[in-house]
Image (tube, rainbow, N blue to C red):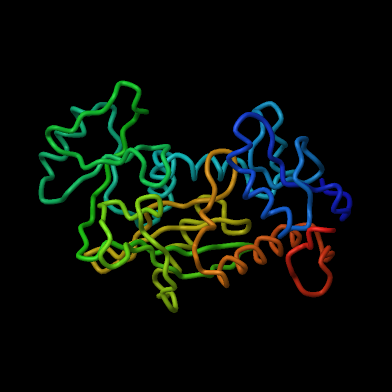
Length: 287
């Protein structure tokens, strides 16, 4: 139960082994939200990282911990999307690589990929072929998803904060660059403004963000346009514990909009008080 609007009672919680990986984002969020980065939980927390025993209850967290867990595991995402009728590429879970290969062989009218369930930036993903091998340490069940071939590989992204969806962008490889089947920033793809989001894409994205509990807080959703003529969801992302939403967009206006909308969403859950006054701006470093 939040009992005050004193900024000293709120924080960006980033502590424990691995906190260094979130340090840059923690500093950015601190200035955007006008709260400190802290090693110990306070009354209300924007959780990035903490030891398991020090994670606050959900009523003291801005982004629900359950949503962080979903965003970090593509198997859990697949189950939630299927349970909530969120449109996604044809997706299946298997207990063994042999079962996965047999399925792909029977359904060879489509291409199939094996997704590493807890990776980011498409790390570990591979096409599912007869010769595909995986290490014994690969997490089970295996997630097998229809691979959609595109003449120009591209993935679209929507953002959400405080119940509102914004920021339609496309992720593509620059002209002349080496491409990859996986359209990830880490593999050389870059973000571009994509105009006005189609209503169908917004509706599908909204359904994914609602299913994962992120719509009212902060998150993003990646989509592709399927050959069937429909928008489908690949995954959602959010900040905290396991991953964070990429901020290095090289789109300054959108980067600022993301910060301002997160700040409004964070403080909007606490009442009418805003530490920055009447119009949001980045907290000066001297404050």
